[in-house]
Image (tube, rainbow, N blue to C red; front, side, top):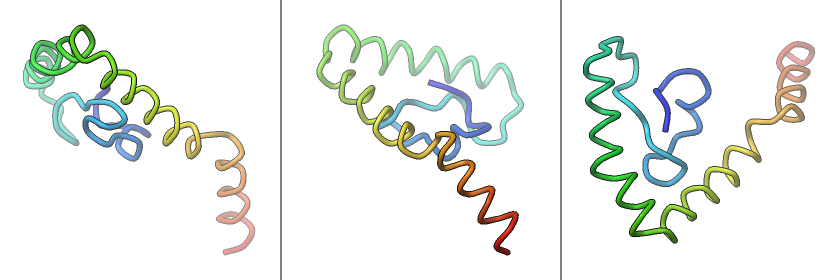
Length: 86
């Protein structure tokens, strides 16, 4: 669960790799807080306590997708391609 900024914009698939807080580009703290508490109360906590297999699936999908893409090897490779092979 994270705000839609930084790498999470690319790594978040809602309900598959995690959950987003607020809306993309939002700077309204009260709306972000409402989104946070709403998702915790209505989605995440019930899944954690009553749908444990579903919660584990989200963790595994997050590791599989984000771990395979957001890593140093890919970053250096992308930097070399972008910087030297324009």
